[in-house]
View (cartoon, rainbow, N blue to C red):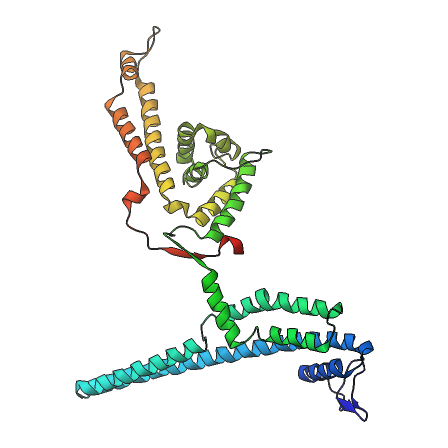
Length: 379
């Protein structure tokens, strides 16, 4: 963009000789020349324009760079698949034609060599199927904050010279390069922590469940601050997930007997009524999915305890309804049951003790699940 006197360094919008809109490269090169060549009175605005155009152009070329990598990945995967299809077809033809095993072995060797070549190519050029996610992470979490900071410095006049601005712009552009991608992946692996025996929910799901549990506590305890005690959420979950209304009422009564502290929660959430609080059930359903409560050892033990308690309550109700009483007091059978536990009660006590004392670690083999999590300092 020149005129008879040379490069146009007026701060008015630039235009090409034929009047068309200049490209990003033309605008960047004009800003770079004018930021370098103008005197100090005009250099500040041109340095700002140079930085802004440079960041914009770098973002565009970064996108093109990842587009090129993705095209390489697709072409390599397409060629590798076709090679394997062709090799399989040749092997089948040789076998059908009755050729010796040596020919089939040669084809298999060639396929192994070709696949090793393709994997080496994709590995060295970082042609992962996750290129899109990697580009988005690089763009939003690394380059954008730095680019915004560079533009802020240029706008406030913090760059005393063109060279200082150029150095920052060059380093910003190098954040989108092959070596930067490799370094980013290496540092991500180094920073990550591997947590073993993690067949349970992820840390992100646990954090979300904790938020929902706080909302549930506020609903179950209006006007009271605090949190549920250990095991109380699991007990409420067992009640809320009971299918039929009749069974749910029996389960709620059993939970209130086994853990009297849950009685107010059951009442406020209306889990012991015909129509429970819809929000409470929704919270418990979501918490159960996030924490995988349906498969947890704690929920299994609570359900077994509840089944025993419901069975005992039903037997007690049946016995109380069928026993004759006298004005002088309870019947002989009732007095005998109060004096010494029956065989059924003794068996129930033994089963309940076995459930409560059971250790989930003794009932299963070694867990091979694991989870990659961020260190606490990086959260």
